[in-house]
Each structure stands twice: as C-alpha cells, then as structure tokens.
Image 1: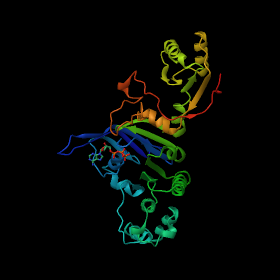
Image 2: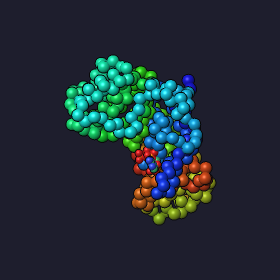
Image 3: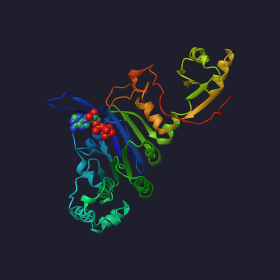
Image 4: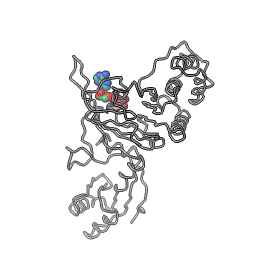
Length: 351
Ligand SMILES: Nc1ncnc2c1ncn2[C@@H]1O[C@H](COP(=O)(O)OP(=O)(O)OP(=O)(O)O)[C@@H](O)[C@H]1O
C-alpha cells in the first residue's frame, strides 16, 4: 500500500519586508504509512507546523513535492480533503454556542447527520459538557472540541498539531486511547506533532524527527530508540585520577570510539562491546570499578539526534544552528552525549 502522506524535498522560506528571509524548511522529507499513529517530532521552530500547514494548503511552499493518498498537494487537495481531518491551527469557535450546537451546525454544513455531533462528543469525552457554552470551556476542553470537529466526517487521515496541549493526565490518557483505537481498530492514519516525548513513545507506532527544517531520522519508534541505545557505556574507576589515562588508552585503541571525561566517570560510545573496554584497559594495567550500559529513552535519543541537549550547563537556544549526527556536513563531529539517560545495568553493572 502506498504511503498516505509522501513529502519530498519540501522547502519554505518566510519572507517579510522588514526582516531577513527565514528558511523554515530545508528539503524536508516525510512518509507516513497507512493505519498507524505517526509522531512528528522536532525542537521548537524546527518546521513541524509549517510542514503541516503546507500539506493542507494553508500556506504555499517554495519547492518539493507533497502527496496525500497518492494525490498531489495542494493541486489535488479538493479531491482528497474530505478524507482528511486536521487540527493544525487553533480553531476559532463561536464562544456563545455550546459544544453540541457548534458541532451540529458543522455537521449540517458538511452534509452529515446531526447525530454525528453527539457521537464525536462522546468519543472525545465531552458528552457531559456538551450543552455548556464554549466560553466556559477550559483549554483542554477546547482542544477536545477541536479534535471532535476533526472527527466529524470520519476521516481516513487525522492530522493533529500538539493534541495533548492543555490536557490533564486523564485527558492525555483518554486521547491516547482514542487515537490508538482510531488507528489500530478503525484503520485511520493518525499524524501527531508533539513535544511530549514520553507521550510519543507511548502513543506512536512510528515517527519522524526533524530539526532545522530537515528530517533527521524516521522509522518505528522502538527501532529508533533501539538503534541509538546500548552503545553508551559509563565507566568508573576506584581512583578518579585514572580517568585521563584510561581515556587516552581507549581513544588510541579504536578509532570509532568516542570518550567523554566527566568529573567521576568516562562516557564511552561506539565501543565494539562492553567486554572490549574491560580488556583494553586491563591490558594497559588499568582496572575499572564499574561498567554500566545505559539505555536511552526517546528523550535522550531526541536530544542527541537534534543536538539540543544542554551542554556545559548552557541551554541550546531556539533556532540556533546545530550540526546533527546525520548531517552530511558534520562528518567527524561527535554530538556530545549530555542527555539524561536512564541508567540500567543491562551489561551486568560491575565487571
Ligand atoms: N508566519 C511566519 N512568518 C515568519 N516566520 C515564521 C512564520 N511561521 C513560522 N515561522 C518560523 O519558521 C520556523 C519554523 O516554525 P514552525 O512553527 O513551523 O516550527 P515548529 O516546529 O512547529 O515549532 P513549535 O514546536 O515551536 O511549534 C521558526 O523559526 C518560526 O519562527
């Protein structure tokens, strides 16, 4: 089955008379397969909303190609838009109408049965608030109403920009269950952009991570995390004075290995295996006191891949140019691993 969304080489530069042109998308690629929840992740200002707006014909792109259900966008959008539900920009509702009346009017204007309004209100958990005026809705309730609006026409593709925005923990749980049910039981393809990495890890089947208007990585969530795990080893010594010598030994022994010295440990990436470290150091008469493989979560993988982990205590600034691990221009540049990692003694801890 062809991908539901295919974006290739998308470019967009915002131009304003008073300001320098700003390149928001720099050849971005995105592919989303049918029937799954796909996460669209990236740091602030990395181009997620711009991509979704361009895909939906809300802004024009400068270059690249986009397809939805195999149809060129934006040229063929009128032929497929009835199959797409989206919440990309905060929808404006008439505040003096109730949620139910709003959805009933929208259903009617789209030629749908009025009863659809109650079905979607139930689905997003707003049944008991349906008769309240929208001006009394909280941010999370408005977010649910927006999703309800997107669900009215039973879309085959649902695109949501930050769906968890404003939701309380129960609301996030509810939204996750709803989106997974739509994808896995109803065959709807769901695309969500989000900053909540733990949420994406729980919610999504696959994801695309973007940075500076370009795709950095895509694939199944589990594969991406697994593909970037396991090679990070924390090495400690009874005498911290040995750190410098041990770092030298490891760096010289194997070109691929990257070693970062922290005050009380070495962080090693790219080692062939944990036992290699033990042996290499022992061969030089250095004995370690602790060797731990640290598994990464999505947050640490994200920070590493997008280069947005704070380094030396300094926050990376929004829009600051970074060179990513997969940047072809960044050959030889190691992204320092300063990401929070969940320590886990997968290799057995002390050796
Ligand atoms: N209308 C606009 N005019 C000028 N620049 C814009 C406009 N909209 C977005 N940008 C810029 O384009 C870049 C990408 O913005 P975009 O909103 O697509 O990022 P994002 O990944 O959705 O960010 P966030 O996660 O913060 O919502 C940012 O640098 C932003 O400042």
